[in-house]
Image 1: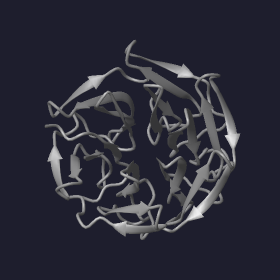
Image 2: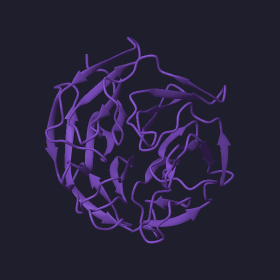
Image 3: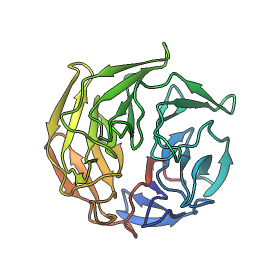
Image 4: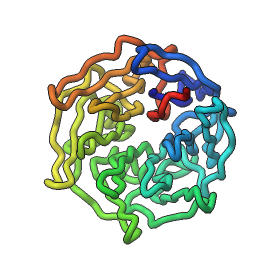
Length: 286
């Protein structure tokens, strides 16, 4: 099932809903303990972690964890830094929280959470401050894609890659377009950057990166312009959940089939339009 956590609608919300792929329907599950949008969401050991974000008044470093078997949320250890619009991914069984915005500046710092020690620790910083950054893990490396650095007052097309074995970041090929608030997903050995915006321009374009060629290649445009959407891969398809088109929050979900290079709309919409939500795939609790 697809889990969609919190988001903006139009303010930060607690609502969590799930999509059952077999039954093709949405249903609500236990709400977040507090309102949360612009968070990072990841799955570790079958539990869903909602990391950082914005609660409607403050950028937070708190982390909530959802146990699907119990349909309950609990608190997990907090990050070192306050981060909203951060990127979150799991690498080597650890949760990495990358970049974001702490309420005053964009961050180039990154940290990771080790379930065994129950602690967050800082790792090497990126070369660039990146808020509204998307991240994805491919071949044991973590990629931080685009975002906004706050200094140049421009959205970023640059991408950097973290190697956990050496604790270092290195730049890879730039995207063809500047993208802040792009959705990032990994499918069939490729890294996808979906939508996002460049200033007021909200994109429907999509491009994908191959580490073998170190190149970004455009693929078919989405059906709708979207930024701040959730992106997740499932059964050979790439799903893009909600987001906003520059004027309103979207309740629709569309999915990309790489074999056909085409997008389709999921017939069932979410119960509310939401941008800046986190998404995850989990096994349906029996």
